Amino acid sequence: MKIKAPRGAFCFMKKIGLLSDTHSFLDPKVFQYFAGVDEIWHAGDIGDVALAERLLAFKPLRAVFGNIDGKELRQLFPEDLHFEIEGKKVFMTHIGGYPGKYQPRVKKIIEETHPDLFICGHSHILKIIPDKIHHLLHINPGACGNYGWHKVKTLVRFELEAAKIQNLEVIEIGTRG
Image (cartoon, rainbow, N blue to C red; front, side):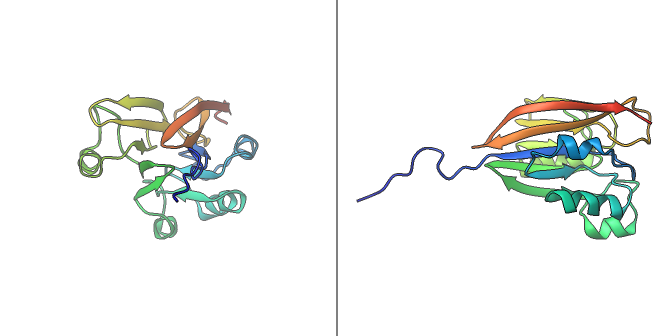
C-alpha cells in the first residue's frame, strides 16, 4: 500500500529579506522590517565584516562580496552564489546588469546555469524585472546604505513557496543620510 502525502506537505515557505549596498551602514530599521524573515540575502558592497556579523547574528545570511568589499569580506563571501531554495534556482552576484543589459560575464553564466531568480546590486537602482528571454525574475533591491547617489534607501521582502515567488514587497526605509 502506498501512502500519498497531502499536496504541499514537504514544501515549507521561506520568507526572504533582500538588501544591497550597505557600504558599512546598517539602518536599524532593517531589523524591524526583517524581523519575520527566515533568511537575509545581501547582494554585495557590504562594507565591513562587523556589518555582516550583525546580520548573521540576527538571521541566517547568504551574501556575495561587492566591488568595494576588501580582502576580509572576499574571503568570507563568494563573488557568485548559486543555490536552490523552495524549488527555485538562484544566482546572486554584485555587478550584474539587468534584462537586455546584462554584464557579459553574467549573461554567460545565466545562459549556462538557467536560474529562475537573478539577484544583483551595484547600481543603487531598485529594479524588479521579468526576463522573458531567459525565463527568470531579476531583482536589484537598490541600496540601503548612506553612501551613493540614491535618494531613498530600499529593501525587498518576499516569500518562496513551492517554486513560487509571492508577496513581493518593496520597502522604503527613509532618505539617504
